[in-house]
Length: 312
Image (cartoon, rainbow, N blue to C red):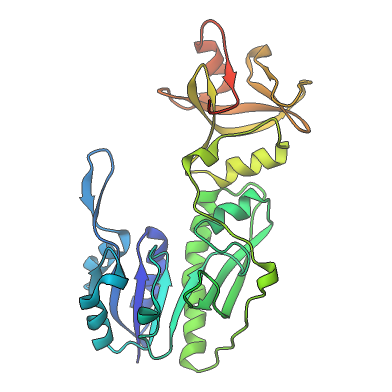
């Protein structure tokens, strides 16, 4: 029986946790997650999805704000004598003191084919860059972020119209499958390790709300389309119309002849020029309103229409 400690927090981690719970050759000795937090409109306190799963299935768990400073918890983990730690979307760095506790090491599941897209947002960056393929990597953890030796990877195709939310769901299920294959190799002592090629490293840093602002003056139709896909559902993409935030859900090519950044509302459609033509903003939502078509939005507006292409 292989003793496993699982580290994770969001719903993305749950399929992998469920797989570990169901395997008969795994003893899930503990799950480590972040503390309960306030969320939602009512700001009620909620446990992370991983902890909710543990409560439902009577799995022992611990929650900590900072594992590296939680000396009491570190001692408890050591007393469990785990064989392996598996980390997926835990959101805290683990010090060497924590990484070295398991007899066979600590392993991280990452949603790209490393060394491409090290960091917090690999799913979104694959879409932002128009990639046709991404995947799941498992690497033996070292102190440097996502830089450990690879012991498993699985490529995953990206659909032409796939959104960030859709790819997220695809990869969270693939992560569980990949982790199961990895465990088979670990238990049978058939793991093979490959060093990452540092010359091919790229990064996927944390996204901010401002990253959703669409810049038509210096991007092509395809670049803008990829940004809308990548940032759906969060943080979403937008411009400003009459000094209100206008969320943009869908676009399509426009036959209008417009310069990059030039705006037109002729024929009751929202059209903006980009580097290689013009774009119609066909599905939108004005701040304080419901999602609608551009035509219905324009029919409901009165007076001058002004689009702003910067945050100023």
